[in-house]
View 1: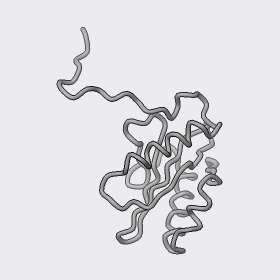
View 2: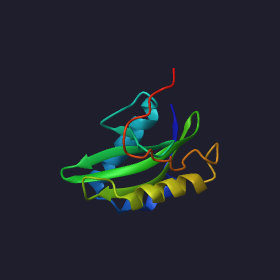
View 3: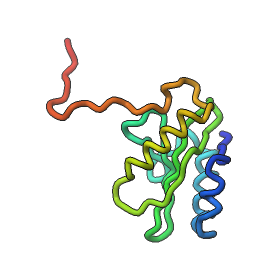
View 4: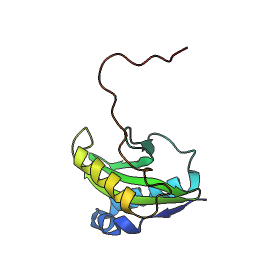
Length: 129
C-alpha cells in the first residue's frame, strides 16, 4: 500500500463533475494499491521529465490528467491536474507540473522533477565499443 497525497490538487478535484471525480478517485485508489506495478492505460511516465508521472482518467470525451511524483518509497504526491482538451498535453501544463513538483519540498533530490535536456534531432548516438 502506498500513501497518495492529493492535498495540492483538492480544489481541482472538487471542481470536477461528480461522476468524473469518482473515476479520478477510483484511479487514485488503483494507483495507491498497485504502485509501481500499474501501467498503461492508467499511468504513464511523462517523457522528458525525470520522475514525473501522469494518472490518466476519462469519462466519455472528457480526459483528466493528474501529474504526480514519488517522494519516498511509499509516498506519491499529486502536484497538478487538468482537463485535457487537445490530443497533445500542452507544454504549459507540463512545465507547471514540473515546477510544482520541484518546489513542493517533497522531492528527494533537487533535480528529481527537472526537465531533461533534449537530444538534437538527427541520427541516434551509437554506443562506443
